[in-house]
Image (cartoon, helix red, strand yellow):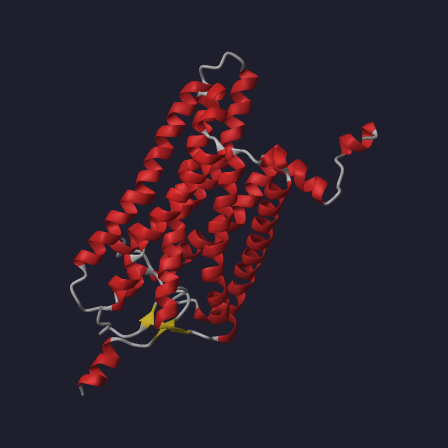
Length: 321
């Protein structure tokens, strides 16, 4: 009897139901999801290849962008294959160990993404507010140390999450109303006192994504103040254009991230369907859009990609170059 109770309260598998209320449309929803995943893989791999092969892109902004691309690939690859297996083959079962691994990878690498955004904001601040000292401040050694700190922070602070979940009794069953394993989605299945686990999760979220967002906002306040002091209108527009792509990417990541985080804890009036869709946007869309936005808006990357595919611009063709 005790063994049966243990098995019931500590299931060896969980069941992911997908998007609640839209099960009949899973096959159609899989089409944009699969397209997003393909574009994410191609875009981020191409970005990494371009930055690696082009020496002129071995600068702080592009090195941090490469680190972000790796984190994007991990997040999307951790979630999309399982989501597509649910949509296509109704393979909803996931082993408890794989579920906890997914929790760790999603949350830790999402935290790393936030850290890389903050690092890129710092790079833009130094480049615009202290241009003469940019190269001396952000040396390759400093860039490597910042990247290492971001990675260690994400891994260490999020490492307790699977262990906090592992020992909980899941008396409300093993059916997760989500497309992937997520910390709060699993906590809702328990009947134990989870106040400490929730408090730890909330503290980590504030010390990572919350603090990063505050630092990013402060960086851009200082950047905008410096930009609007520039005497030339052309210089102001160029500086704002340089930061425009970064701001777009940041907003695409933080808006759905904060919505998903706050909805789990305080948004009891939000329908599960809307919440799960936004949660999927948070892990799927930014990895696809990051290389597209930076590729389109950043001249160096755009020109290098054209060279890789041996495509000449109309101007080059007209001048015979």
